[in-house]
Image (spheres, rainbow, N blue to C red):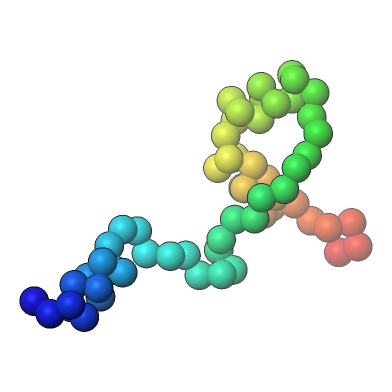
Length: 59
């Protein structure tokens, strides 16, 4: 195996990258401790579904 082949194999290891439109972006929000607990219990899948279903006020 050549050096180039080893480098190519090393680059392809691991999980493939997500497309730019699917990558998550970090941010900060302020919630009360009770709301943080509820959000953690409901999980991120629930949050993503609720946000996707929500309609913007001007629609």
